[in-house]
Image (cartoon, rainbow, N blue to C red; front, side, top):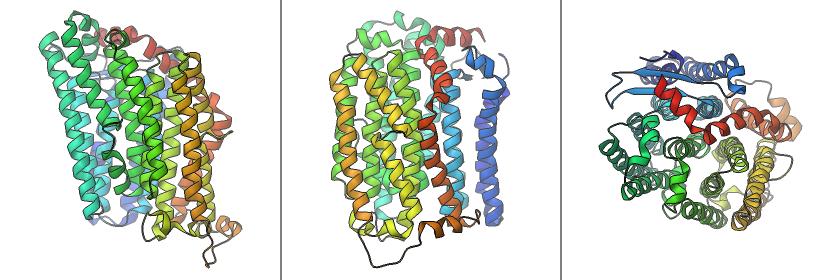
Length: 511
């Protein structure tokens, strides 16, 4: 057995326990149930934060590493959790954003809350497991768990449209899982181990055709999960069908978790050089850029607000994946910064649009007329976050896009630089289209901004709680845009892990 860092197992066990508690919380009153949900998400955030703060020096010097092993070490079916600077960074940002989404959910979800929160916390547990696991089999279980627990959340509103979206999501999720499973089995038959670190050590021993097969199936699995063109069409349907907080979870958080898994598999476990040698890195990079452009073009045509936001996510995820595949320090810096920025912006956009759409007949652009006058302050927040995603200074979206653009220019990859710029211009057009519709005058008196500010006094009034979360995201997007240097240390130490996988491998195998 290795060093027992129980905190790691707690990060997965705690949400699972809360999920069970929530499932049986039918007899609790609403306030008690909401308190448990917020407290649970708060403790989870506190746990990750305390890991960061207590080990600050180690994190700063790139010496941070925790490990927990459960089971018989010599069998393939051992639960092996490990945390380095890369997984710490992801665990931290994911837990922070989910904490806000949970607070928003307590006021947004008005029925079947026990089922909703039970599934929500199971997804959180699976996400933490995916980030922390150090072996392929456990990762497979967590990825499948994410698919299975998010499916009923997509069809939560039980309409024909949502059920169809959920079934499509389930089908593609499981298909991606099957491809992953094939690679995993091939690795096991060739190397007799599923520990990522052990695979990393001996991947070169596998014959080249077999290496190619393994990598292609892993790539297929992740291209499906990330909604990269040409297997992207399920994503807008699924992300727009579910309640707003779940859209924020899927587009804001979950896609970044799959990007993290991509990094773990193709930098830590299978050295990136293999992708280059097998001529796959350039192909996937170009595919991601084409996917990014197509995402923005489809967003331009979308007449449904939530579908437009989901297509826009395809545009951003394609861009992040492409920049990471440049495999340089500049590229990782831009990519990781944009992962953080997009996580905040897209969560903020789905939550604010969810709040605004409560009073409309549908999500169709024609039904948004005058919505900007009803909740002016929330709508201003929505506009600010839109500007962030377009890349307007001084917001965090501008900073991260700027570094992504610089990375493409440094690598002399001009098609990539063109896609970043074109994506921003197209985004400007499609966001303006919705904003102008929302501001079309409808003969109806809304509150003035001053009245809205004064009405915020009662924070625990449900609408005010939701508004406050939207304002928090907006403020963070502005503040982090001006003070993005706060991310410099955690991001740079995460880059160190990506560029020096040998350290992680040695520590996992040594433990």
